[in-house]
Image (cartoon, rainbow, N blue to C red; front, side, top):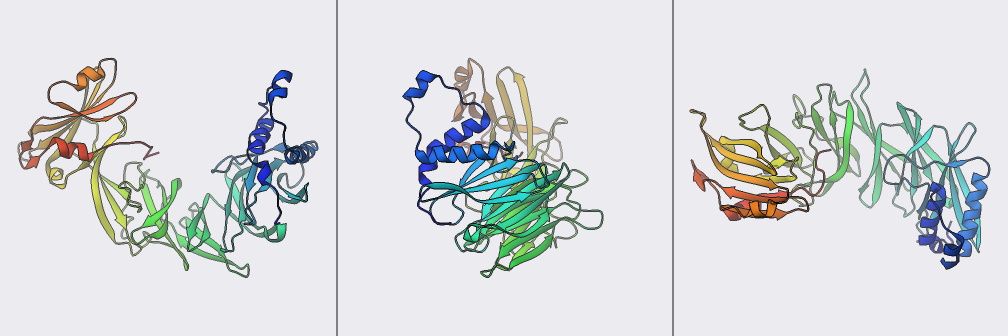
Length: 437
């Protein structure tokens, strides 16, 4: 499929074709004269797409995943030039069609059509499963609201060949040793736990499949993330809920030998099981994923507050403590908790002052039950937030567009707990992205 074209289809193609496809192209005759002339390649490509649509077909972009365009530019054969893939729904027994459009010597033509059954394209991924530099096309199709199938296609020689199809609940591709591995997840059935399957291709085109079980009772998939364990081992973090709505993390390691769930042998239950729907993250930005394990703190109300222990894993299943945090999701920040605070720590919230939301950290005497406050962290909003940030004893932590974060040390030393302004600044972190949902 190697050819000298396609780069000329770049920016003009991406903007104009998507505008035409969405029906939002609006321009007057005078404005038209002021536009640069479209290239001949673009005009020929648009004619080819119009010919496809003139049969009654319509654009049908994938509804999930990162590749959701109706028309996509992808360098499938690894020659440095993009091919054009148009996602179409038509009539017939195989209504879902992917038109592969190519160009040779100035002529644009349909190089291939990939057809399949289903009601919609669910998602599409492009991955080099055999490490030869060309991409396989992995297409997920919805068969019904409860059933989806993916198909794997090799595109060698410019024409697709079907390598296999399988039912799935989720799928993704992970880089392992210079090539990609396709990982397919399936829900549990009445007979057996859910499964994860890894697929790769050998140099001679043979499909290699390995399987591992997911945690028994895992019923839904809330988040699937690729990351690395300590030692830079590629892994997939599969997180979801069981029948009791407890969140569970399965860690699937991916090597040249296939896939393995390091949590499968955890006894008697998966140690990551937790009541909070919070998910794994590289919380300390060291390049390795950490799993959150919450524990409830002392509180003076029905509202629960948690410390979150973040732990990293090796491929053997051995775990390492990273640090412990208190996360205030509603106000957009978290705080790294010193170890010496933990045994007697209590937390409560005070929203009694308008425009001032306060988290109060206290020492709790286990025998008397007395609470001694030592630190307050404020989230300030409203017209007078800057004035309230300068109240005696308060110091600024981090500015936000709509709020100001500041703190106040109530007692710098209480029952073995010491607090300093420098330590508070160092431990405070704004939450810049959604860490939980």
